[in-house]
Length: 276
Image (cartoon, rainbow, N blue to C red):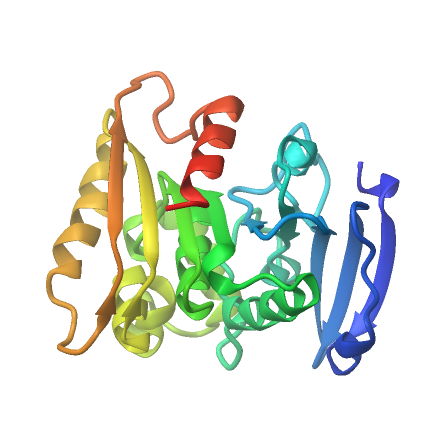
């Protein structure tokens, strides 16, 4: 499905020269110090808002092959705002469908993605207060990090992970083996805790962004391992930390379990959350 979009190749050093069209979706590939960062970008000239979508677990009917993965890209025309989908380059390090932007031991890809998003913001002339990062599951995890890096931005997250070591052991271990080879989980926690735990990251940057946290209360695993520890740990942020409002919205649907709410509900939440 990505064949329908024009592709633009660039390098980090030449981003300033990048000419992006308005009202036309394009694939943008940016090479930066040996790493390929890929985005699907649709800028709207008349919009002051920018939506940034991250992918959860990789392959779907929408995108059966990849990476790159741009989950929910077929929804693009449902939104009147500028919109960017980003791929996680960590996926190219091995056969995994979700890697939480971990990158390598000496390079945190989520931080790099945030830098590139800010470059796109300047081109679209969008202020950070009008930027909303959205994602479910692993995409929600990444959205909270990106909103932390892009000061003033907001995050809308649906059933996100908030600490990777409290998620399913096998996929997390696979990613740790790719990003932090030869380290035990305990060593990863000690050396890279601010990359794998959302609250530790917020403490590290001394900042908590605005977050709209949408959670299925019927899925106990998420409640017990992610939402409740997240809220508890936030009570122990360091003095002087800038903490913005976090709104938790619980719904109850035993059939959905960890899955996100429906397409239309997601669209409605995005359109609401961008203005909070």
